[in-house]
Image (cartoon, rainbow, N blue to C red; front, side, top):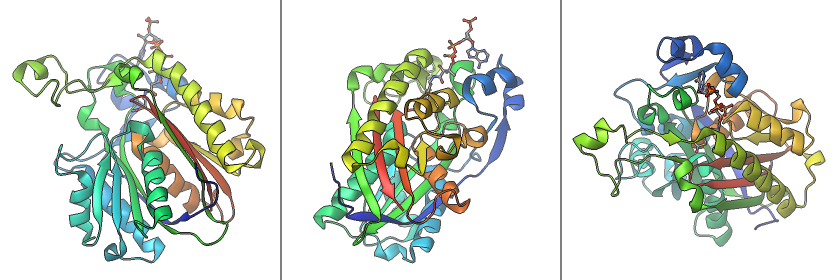
Length: 329
Ligand code: ACO
């Protein structure tokens, strides 16, 4: 959509908190084992947020770290976008709760629900707001507490998910650094492959919906796997094409951390070396909208993402949604 960078990332942050739940802990909860989980997913452990805490308790510290690195204060923000499918409450939005927590009194605030592609959706919106002059400084957060909607009796899903938050502060770019492409897509016909049936206007909470376990994630893992590989590839190629960049020129690919085998399929289709792909799924599991900003922050702190590097973010998620963004740091 946009080739010339109008917006760039000024700072990043992340937050992980709570109990670390290992595959061995899961062995005691459902009929599974460490070897199966590692071989099928690449996951070894994940964070589970403390009881009594909520999404905004992760999102706010991630935002504060990003603001600090950007050299800005909360009052400088014009907009807060939180990508999440696990808000504190249906409303007010988690973005409004974070606005109050960090004291961003000049910012508008809203949530975006695009599941695991949410951070790229948020980044695309932020880029457009900065491009039109509607906002100067935009905070984009991906934050999830998936443990609260995970069915801990369903071995097909409970091994996958974890909690966490990642954030980026964006501002105007005058030079070569910034967002070189932002591509987002959806196909609502695939919505039932991954969904939360209960709690909305379709199935409001009743004793029956609770008894039927409708307030937990339902997933058709096998079918998602196939669409994930297809849509991640589509997103990656569009993200590169729109920026006029070849895969061989990439310094780093940061894919959504859903499953190691999905990441390997994208890596092989783009013909990338291990050094060109950032993977941290082992330690955090699938944190949905938080996975890319957590990985991006980690890659920067570990020196895997340096000044001038070209980095492709690519994600797929429930909806179905998918997207990619090429960023020059
Ligand atoms: N432990 C042990 N055995 C298991 C487990 C488990 N946790 N789960 C399933 N099995 C068994 C199955 O019952 C099946 O047994 P059977 O052959 O006797 O019937 C066997 O293992 C194989 O099951 P599959 O479902 O075919 O396993 P698959 O290789 O597809 O792996 C998985 C399952 C990991 C869920 C995979 O399909 C996947 O990762 N899919 C993508 C899911 C995903 O990424 N979801 C998130 C989307 S992003 C978002 O928006 C949140």
